[in-house]
Length: 165
Ligand code: 4NP
Image 1 (cartoon, rainbow, N blue to C red):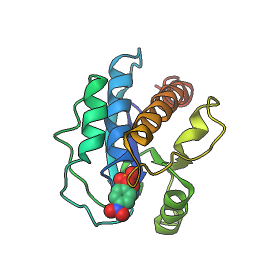
Image 2: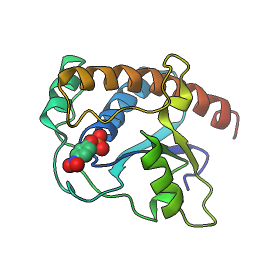
Image 3: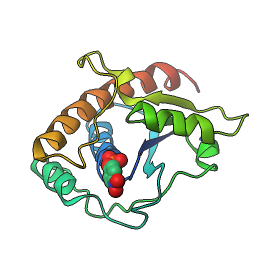
């Protein structure tokens, strides 16, 4: 678990090549453009290991690039039990990821395990749909959802962590 001068955020999807690396890049960009005083450790992982070591999907890289975000250097990895000791927030993209995380979590963990869209009221859905099998519009929409949720998460971090010395 991070000490109070640093907050750790881990984004989780199934493959760690579409939604969660996009969330890692977008959230990092939002933090850099925010007035958050804390240091934030940001990472992403997949519940599955099919793509471990792979860069993000080329469609995610392209859509990110149009928004000034570079995902090229990210590499997929699988979630591990030690993540529950090292991150304050573990953020699931959909309910399937969420229930896999709850099953994997050590009993004494102290992370906030939450759906990413819990941090925004701008969408009627609660889940970020998997864009892997669709066209580029799915990636655009996922990016818009992730951007809104990132700004909501920054507000949550400010509320819960910035008051602590
Ligand atoms: P992600 O998308 O969970 O957003 O990274 C997927 C990527 C790959 C697969 C499924 C979802 N796959 O089945 O290989």
